[in-house]
Length: 288
Image 1 (cartoon, rainbow, N blue to C red):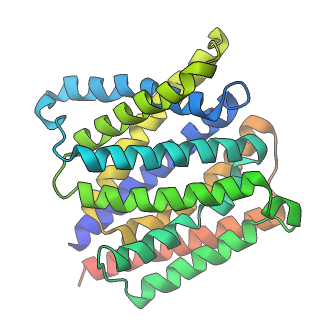
Image 2: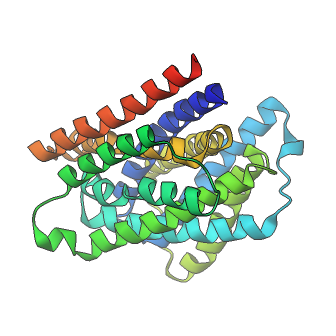
Protein backbone atom coordinates (compact mmCIF):
# COMPACT_ATOMS: atom_id res chain seq x y z
CA UNK A 1 0.00 0.00 0.00
CA UNK A 2 2.78 2.43 0.92
CA UNK A 3 4.65 1.75 -2.33
CA UNK A 4 1.42 2.57 -4.18
CA UNK A 5 1.24 5.85 -2.29
CA UNK A 6 4.77 6.70 -3.40
CA UNK A 7 3.86 5.94 -7.04
CA UNK A 8 0.90 8.28 -6.63
CA UNK A 9 3.18 11.04 -5.34
CA UNK A 10 5.56 10.71 -8.31
CA UNK A 11 2.60 10.76 -10.71
CA UNK A 12 1.11 13.92 -9.17
CA UNK A 13 4.48 15.71 -9.36
CA UNK A 14 4.70 14.94 -13.09
CA UNK A 15 1.09 16.03 -13.55
CA UNK A 16 1.67 19.34 -11.76
CA UNK A 17 4.65 20.22 -13.97
CA UNK A 18 2.68 19.38 -17.11
CA UNK A 19 -0.37 21.33 -15.96
CA UNK A 20 1.79 24.35 -15.10
CA UNK A 21 3.05 24.42 -18.69
CA UNK A 22 -0.53 23.98 -19.89
CA UNK A 23 -1.70 26.85 -17.68
CA UNK A 24 1.00 29.11 -19.12
CA UNK A 25 -0.30 28.29 -22.61
CA UNK A 26 -3.87 29.00 -21.48
CA UNK A 27 -2.79 32.34 -20.00
CA UNK A 28 -1.17 33.31 -23.31
CA UNK A 29 -4.12 32.16 -25.44
CA UNK A 30 -6.58 33.73 -23.00
CA UNK A 31 -5.38 37.17 -24.07
CA UNK A 32 -6.79 36.56 -27.57
CA UNK A 33 -9.67 34.11 -27.09
CA UNK A 34 -12.56 33.65 -24.67
CA UNK A 35 -12.16 31.25 -21.71
CA UNK A 36 -14.73 28.92 -23.28
CA UNK A 37 -12.82 28.83 -26.57
CA UNK A 38 -9.52 28.13 -24.82
CA UNK A 39 -11.24 25.34 -22.87
CA UNK A 40 -12.49 23.89 -26.16
CA UNK A 41 -9.00 24.07 -27.65
CA UNK A 42 -7.71 22.31 -24.53
CA UNK A 43 -10.00 19.37 -25.24
CA UNK A 44 -9.47 19.06 -28.99
CA UNK A 45 -5.71 19.64 -28.84
CA UNK A 46 -5.17 16.89 -26.25
CA UNK A 47 -7.33 14.22 -27.92
CA UNK A 48 -4.79 13.33 -30.66
CA UNK A 49 -2.08 12.67 -28.07
CA UNK A 50 -4.35 10.31 -26.11
CA UNK A 51 -5.33 8.50 -29.32
CA UNK A 52 -1.65 8.24 -30.29
CA UNK A 53 -0.84 6.70 -26.91
CA UNK A 54 -3.64 4.17 -27.34
CA UNK A 55 -2.48 3.31 -30.87
CA UNK A 56 1.16 2.85 -29.84
CA UNK A 57 0.25 0.60 -26.92
CA UNK A 58 -2.69 -1.16 -28.65
CA UNK A 59 -5.01 -0.49 -25.72
CA UNK A 60 -8.18 0.34 -27.65
CA UNK A 61 -10.21 -1.90 -25.35
CA UNK A 62 -9.45 0.45 -22.45
CA UNK A 63 -11.17 3.46 -24.04
CA UNK A 64 -14.76 2.38 -23.45
CA UNK A 65 -16.26 4.02 -20.34
CA UNK A 66 -18.99 2.30 -18.34
CA UNK A 67 -20.22 5.11 -16.08
CA UNK A 68 -21.13 7.83 -18.56
CA UNK A 69 -23.19 9.80 -16.05
CA UNK A 70 -20.22 10.35 -13.75
CA UNK A 71 -17.94 11.07 -16.71
CA UNK A 72 -20.29 13.79 -17.97
CA UNK A 73 -20.69 15.30 -14.49
CA UNK A 74 -16.94 15.34 -14.01
CA UNK A 75 -16.54 16.93 -17.45
CA UNK A 76 -19.02 19.69 -16.59
CA UNK A 77 -17.12 20.39 -13.36
CA UNK A 78 -13.88 20.49 -15.35
CA UNK A 79 -15.34 22.95 -17.86
CA UNK A 80 -16.44 25.23 -15.03
CA UNK A 81 -13.02 24.92 -13.40
CA UNK A 82 -11.12 25.67 -16.62
CA UNK A 83 -13.28 28.64 -17.61
CA UNK A 84 -12.97 30.16 -14.14
CA UNK A 85 -9.23 29.53 -13.93
CA UNK A 86 -8.55 30.90 -17.42
CA UNK A 87 -10.46 34.04 -16.47
CA UNK A 88 -8.33 34.28 -13.34
CA UNK A 89 -4.95 33.98 -15.10
CA UNK A 90 -6.05 36.56 -17.68
CA UNK A 91 -6.17 39.16 -14.92
CA UNK A 92 -3.60 37.86 -12.42
CA UNK A 93 -0.14 36.34 -12.69
CA UNK A 94 0.13 32.55 -12.65
CA UNK A 95 1.64 32.57 -9.16
CA UNK A 96 -1.11 34.84 -7.80
CA UNK A 97 -3.85 32.64 -9.27
CA UNK A 98 -2.12 29.53 -7.96
CA UNK A 99 -1.81 31.01 -4.47
CA UNK A 100 -5.60 31.27 -4.28
CA UNK A 101 -6.46 28.18 -6.34
CA UNK A 102 -4.26 25.96 -4.21
CA UNK A 103 -6.62 25.98 -1.30
CA UNK A 104 -8.02 23.07 -3.36
CA UNK A 105 -5.78 20.41 -1.73
CA UNK A 106 -7.23 21.30 1.67
CA UNK A 107 -10.72 20.97 0.20
CA UNK A 108 -9.80 17.63 -1.39
CA UNK A 109 -8.46 16.34 1.92
CA UNK A 110 -11.61 17.42 3.75
CA UNK A 111 -13.83 15.86 1.08
CA UNK A 112 -11.78 12.64 1.10
CA UNK A 113 -12.52 12.27 4.81
CA UNK A 114 -16.21 13.20 4.50
CA UNK A 115 -17.06 11.41 1.23
CA UNK A 116 -14.48 8.66 0.73
CA UNK A 117 -13.94 7.92 4.44
CA UNK A 118 -10.17 8.02 3.99
CA UNK A 119 -7.85 8.22 6.99
CA UNK A 120 -5.48 11.17 7.37
CA UNK A 121 -2.83 10.77 10.07
CA UNK A 122 -1.61 13.68 12.16
CA UNK A 123 1.78 13.88 10.41
CA UNK A 124 0.05 14.54 7.07
CA UNK A 125 -2.21 17.14 8.66
CA UNK A 126 0.92 18.94 9.90
CA UNK A 127 2.47 18.81 6.42
CA UNK A 128 -0.77 20.11 4.88
CA UNK A 129 -0.85 22.93 7.45
CA UNK A 130 2.74 23.83 6.56
CA UNK A 131 1.73 23.96 2.90
CA UNK A 132 -1.18 26.25 3.72
CA UNK A 133 1.16 28.59 5.59
CA UNK A 134 3.13 28.81 2.34
CA UNK A 135 -0.07 29.59 0.42
CA UNK A 136 -0.89 32.40 2.85
CA UNK A 137 2.62 33.77 2.41
CA UNK A 138 2.05 33.81 -1.36
CA UNK A 139 -1.11 35.92 -1.12
CA UNK A 140 -0.69 39.58 -2.00
CA UNK A 141 -1.40 42.06 0.79
CA UNK A 142 -3.42 44.42 -1.41
CA UNK A 143 -7.10 44.06 -0.56
CA UNK A 144 -8.24 44.73 -4.11
CA UNK A 145 -6.32 41.68 -5.36
CA UNK A 146 -7.82 39.38 -2.76
CA UNK A 147 -11.40 40.38 -3.54
CA UNK A 148 -10.97 40.96 -7.29
CA UNK A 149 -13.06 38.99 -9.79
CA UNK A 150 -9.91 37.15 -10.84
CA UNK A 151 -9.26 36.06 -7.26
CA UNK A 152 -12.88 35.00 -6.76
CA UNK A 153 -12.72 33.04 -10.02
CA UNK A 154 -9.61 31.21 -8.79
CA UNK A 155 -11.38 30.32 -5.54
CA UNK A 156 -14.46 29.05 -7.39
CA UNK A 157 -12.20 27.03 -9.70
CA UNK A 158 -10.58 25.44 -6.64
CA UNK A 159 -13.97 24.28 -5.37
CA UNK A 160 -14.79 22.72 -8.75
CA UNK A 161 -11.37 21.07 -8.84
CA UNK A 162 -11.80 19.53 -5.38
CA UNK A 163 -15.07 17.84 -6.32
CA UNK A 164 -13.64 16.70 -9.67
CA UNK A 165 -10.61 15.20 -7.91
CA UNK A 166 -12.85 13.17 -5.61
CA UNK A 167 -14.77 11.95 -8.67
CA UNK A 168 -11.50 10.80 -10.29
CA UNK A 169 -10.75 8.75 -7.19
CA UNK A 170 -14.22 7.17 -7.37
CA UNK A 171 -14.12 6.56 -11.13
CA UNK A 172 -10.66 4.98 -10.99
CA UNK A 173 -12.10 2.08 -9.00
CA UNK A 174 -13.98 0.81 -12.06
CA UNK A 175 -12.66 2.75 -15.08
CA UNK A 176 -9.28 2.64 -16.82
CA UNK A 177 -7.00 5.65 -16.87
CA UNK A 178 -7.41 5.94 -20.64
CA UNK A 179 -11.22 5.79 -20.52
CA UNK A 180 -11.30 8.54 -17.87
CA UNK A 181 -8.88 10.72 -19.87
CA UNK A 182 -10.60 10.12 -23.21
CA UNK A 183 -14.15 10.71 -21.97
CA UNK A 184 -13.03 13.84 -20.09
CA UNK A 185 -11.54 15.35 -23.24
CA UNK A 186 -14.57 14.39 -25.34
CA UNK A 187 -16.96 16.01 -22.88
CA UNK A 188 -15.07 19.31 -22.63
CA UNK A 189 -14.39 19.39 -26.39
CA UNK A 190 -18.04 18.96 -27.37
CA UNK A 191 -19.86 20.74 -24.54
CA UNK A 192 -17.46 23.68 -24.25
CA UNK A 193 -17.21 23.78 -28.06
CA UNK A 194 -20.99 24.00 -28.41
CA UNK A 195 -21.13 26.86 -25.92
CA UNK A 196 -18.16 28.68 -27.47
CA UNK A 197 -19.19 28.31 -31.12
CA UNK A 198 -21.57 31.32 -31.40
CA UNK A 199 -18.72 33.69 -30.45
CA UNK A 200 -15.83 31.71 -31.95
CA UNK A 201 -12.74 33.73 -32.90
CA UNK A 202 -10.64 32.43 -35.84
CA UNK A 203 -7.36 31.01 -34.58
CA UNK A 204 -4.23 32.87 -35.67
CA UNK A 205 -1.46 30.81 -37.30
CA UNK A 206 1.11 32.17 -34.84
CA UNK A 207 -0.85 30.63 -31.97
CA UNK A 208 -0.78 27.02 -33.20
CA UNK A 209 2.52 26.20 -31.39
CA UNK A 210 0.88 27.38 -28.17
CA UNK A 211 -2.17 25.22 -28.91
CA UNK A 212 0.09 22.20 -29.56
CA UNK A 213 1.83 22.87 -26.24
CA UNK A 214 -1.56 23.19 -24.57
CA UNK A 215 -2.65 19.84 -26.00
CA UNK A 216 0.52 17.89 -25.28
CA UNK A 217 1.03 19.19 -21.74
CA UNK A 218 -2.66 18.78 -21.00
CA UNK A 219 -2.66 15.16 -22.18
CA UNK A 220 0.42 14.31 -20.10
CA UNK A 221 -1.01 16.04 -17.04
CA UNK A 222 -4.41 14.42 -17.44
CA UNK A 223 -2.95 10.92 -17.72
CA UNK A 224 -0.66 11.26 -14.71
CA UNK A 225 -3.16 12.95 -12.41
CA UNK A 226 -5.53 10.03 -12.92
CA UNK A 227 -2.66 7.62 -12.27
CA UNK A 228 -1.90 9.54 -9.08
CA UNK A 229 -5.43 9.21 -7.73
CA UNK A 230 -5.55 5.57 -8.85
CA UNK A 231 -2.43 4.58 -6.90
CA UNK A 232 -2.94 6.64 -3.75
CA UNK A 233 -5.71 8.16 -1.63
CA UNK A 234 -6.73 11.72 -2.46
CA UNK A 235 -5.49 12.85 0.94
CA UNK A 236 -1.96 11.66 0.04
CA UNK A 237 -1.56 13.12 -3.45
CA UNK A 238 -3.57 16.35 -3.13
CA UNK A 239 -1.00 18.26 -1.01
CA UNK A 240 1.56 17.99 -3.82
CA UNK A 241 -0.53 20.37 -5.89
CA UNK A 242 1.23 23.04 -3.81
CA UNK A 243 4.40 22.59 -5.87
CA UNK A 244 2.58 24.38 -8.71
CA UNK A 245 3.33 27.62 -6.87
CA UNK A 246 7.02 27.20 -7.60
CA UNK A 247 6.44 26.34 -11.28
CA UNK A 248 3.98 29.21 -11.68
CA UNK A 249 6.48 31.73 -10.33
CA UNK A 250 9.19 30.32 -12.60
CA UNK A 251 7.00 30.50 -15.71
CA UNK A 252 5.90 34.05 -14.81
CA UNK A 253 9.56 35.04 -14.82
CA UNK A 254 10.56 33.15 -17.97
CA UNK A 255 7.58 34.09 -20.15
CA UNK A 256 6.32 37.42 -18.82
CA UNK A 257 9.38 38.80 -17.04
CA UNK A 258 7.38 39.01 -13.83
CA UNK A 259 9.58 38.50 -10.81
CA UNK A 260 7.99 37.03 -7.69
CA UNK A 261 8.00 39.09 -4.53
CA UNK A 262 10.04 38.01 -1.52
CA UNK A 263 6.88 36.59 0.06
CA UNK A 264 6.45 34.42 -3.04
CA UNK A 265 9.94 32.98 -2.61
CA UNK A 266 9.38 32.42 1.10
CA UNK A 267 5.99 30.84 0.48
CA UNK A 268 7.38 28.57 -2.22
CA UNK A 269 10.11 27.38 0.13
CA UNK A 270 7.58 26.61 2.87
CA UNK A 271 5.34 24.77 0.41
CA UNK A 272 8.26 22.71 -0.89
CA UNK A 273 9.26 21.87 2.70
CA UNK A 274 5.78 20.56 3.42
CA UNK A 275 5.81 18.44 0.27
CA UNK A 276 9.27 17.04 0.97
CA UNK A 277 8.20 16.10 4.48
CA UNK A 278 5.26 14.15 3.06
CA UNK A 279 7.62 12.26 0.74
CA UNK A 280 9.86 11.52 3.73
CA UNK A 281 6.90 10.20 5.73
CA UNK A 282 5.89 7.91 2.85
CA UNK A 283 9.40 6.47 2.58
CA UNK A 284 9.72 5.95 6.33
CA UNK A 285 6.36 4.19 6.48
CA UNK A 286 7.18 2.06 3.42
CA UNK A 287 10.35 0.70 5.04
CA UNK A 288 8.56 -0.44 8.20
